[in-house]
Length: 305
Ligand SMILES: Cc1cc2nc3c(=O)[nH]c(=O)nc-3n(C[C@H](O)[C@H](O)[C@H](O)COP(=O)(O)OP(=O)(O)OC[C@H]3O[C@@H](n4cnc5c(N)ncnc54)[C@H](O)[C@@H]3O)c2cc1C
Image (cartoon, rainbow, N blue to C red; front, side, top):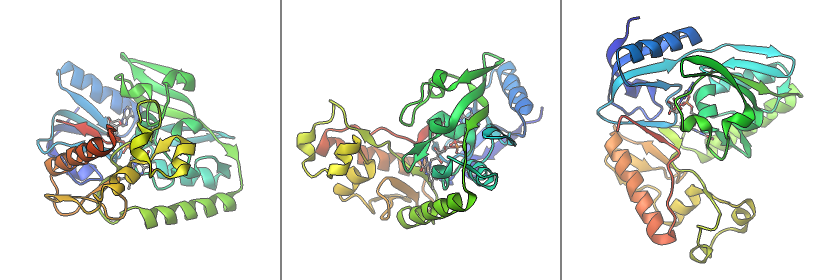
């Protein structure tokens, strides 16, 4: 198996940031994924699998090991059941499902990246989340392929068991419902329009940097007297709202900027380095902590730091 050497990861992240992968491989099937991992283990290399690179910040010094890009795609429809390779582009899955007259995945339109990445982070939007649709997940665990039921995946808000183990997600079974194609198309058109209006899609980014804050006993509501009522009702405070109230839109460090369109997006405005982004993240966290006594948690993952 031949790995590329010193491949710039900025080419494979939506932030367009990141140093080189010492070793690099694009896997086009489950078998190739498994072979690449076995090879990494044999050579005692650190390894990481990437989907669309749309939820990560890669360090300026890159990754000292093997980066495997997952292009293990392919979608099979069996009535209302869908089985897809983990490297399937989520947006393709949304469109193909709608073409088949299936409904349920519309919420995911506009989320870049792969199905595997979406399952791992339990990606969600517009009151939908990946776990709503997943019924089974096939993984490679300790060199064996096993199939997990949804209940074994410990899904939560932007959470899954896969963030705490080394499972490699190989394929995913989803359960959708018979729907109306025209209605679904109308729905996704509206959602895409909404994203275009609210998100700085014209700049490289990794989407929302921070998770929204779940309102629990740790949140001191006395410090949040200006909190809109709807957030109280949904028991979730948008990180964007917190950042916006601190007037941080437009705050720039190096080439990285808090988007003036959406306060939870950091954009690569002008040749930003990972270090610029990291400093901006620290600055935002400090400001939010000082004002609200809330510790924002990153949704974006750090690679190679
Ligand atoms: C413009 C924009 C809008 C976005 N909007 C949203 C949104 O509305 N909601 C939302 O939740 N997110 C959103 N995101 C973030 C991102 O697109 C999602 O989190 C997406 O699901 C990540 O998938 P990915 O394939 O790019 O994962 P990557 O970024 O490639 O990887 C993320 C993590 O998953 C791991 N991983 C990837 N594939 C596998 C696998 N097969 N097995 C095991 N681990 C794996 C990686 O190792 C890494 O740790 C947005 C991003 C952008 C740029």
